[in-house]
Image 1: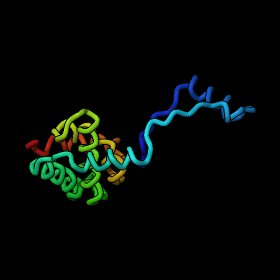
Image 2: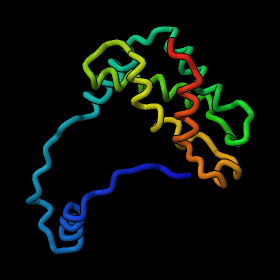
Image 3: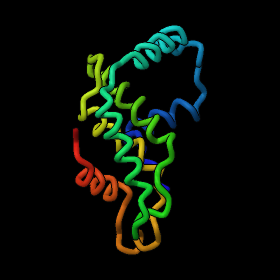
Image 4: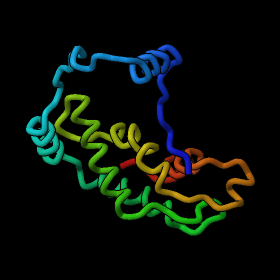
Length: 146
């Protein structure tokens, strides 16, 4: 399974090497608080309150259930945790976009990150060079947007 992460640039990594492998006065490094536990809990509560239409929940379920259908490419589809993660992630994306409701683009924005590691492809898929992203794209083309 592959998880996509963004690596630092060469310059950023060099700075990390210098910082972490040299004698450093860590007391002199200034750390600015961005979020604390209370703020994070407040954001989590706000995200829970963001509205998602029933039709969009059905859309998410249709996508996840499509990953469970028997075919030549998917050995193991996404679990119910994928459905939950898609709803929460779509709500979080809406929050980051300054909305108190989810739109289809919120789902599409997070779907690859949510499903990428929740599906296991068959050997046939790998032999044909299919990637999880290809399968997700195919599913998005099949499942009708409400």
